[in-house]
Length: 406
Image (tube, one colour):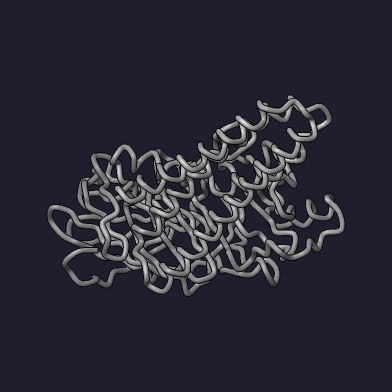
């Protein structure tokens, strides 16, 4: 995952005919019933549900009863106005701080001004979290649409970026106050970064450019998962609001104890890490694990009070992920191959001519929603949801629906 800056994370992404009952042919086997996946959603501990995977990084999950939709978010007028208003208010606060700072030369007064600016930023981050919580619950109970939900995500991302800019400006003022340590404002940086996942960055860039990425959205009252495939990368953001206790007390007796506890969540990623960093830069009692590994990058936030991962951002190169299940369905004119990566990772659909083996252009739908086309090369990577789903393949000659089982 690329960072927006050295200290912070930067930043979603079948038609007319009824389902046709088909059989699957696994590699090296005769045609027969599709095998069941052996990957199960199991709790890593009593408070941190994970997909425990082999040969790739574990992943945080949302509850199985989650609501599922697919959407192509766009930056609507309301979001643009709200984001502009957020920026104006933030600029006004920061201008007032700069003016007051320059009007005094007293180091104690300047330190108090920096503390007050930091506190205002922390209050704004808490407001982002509350806006997010309300939107999650509203979407889960049907009060708002998936478009409105993703627009909230974009608004929070934009405001977090503005907060980051002001935070960096604040650093310059810190250096002008003798004895004022940067560590007094560092926790704010980590809190801002929780709203700056790479998934959000891709969504924001694409929606501004009207490229409309297809995002898989899975949401319950306890949290949400956003996933998409773009530019050969699989992006996933999972937030578990029920596993965050901002007002609780940390259960870790030391920094090293927190680090050991967090490390247990991602054994494969750590064993194969290209780089690793653990820090306590997000407040309150929120610890960040950063791991770069052969499949991509992982950012994981563990709450000291619940001892659970409450946020997770992953960016994975789809071509590097292991294929755990490969199945092929044959119909009248086409063969459809589905390559599934471990757990709830992305899946690749390949459509070829049954006689010639040449790639076939097709419209691909997930649970009845068009999510892309295979194009000239005959294949498409999908951000598939957790649990059962249907894939519909529509070519010029026929429409075929397959239902991979988990």
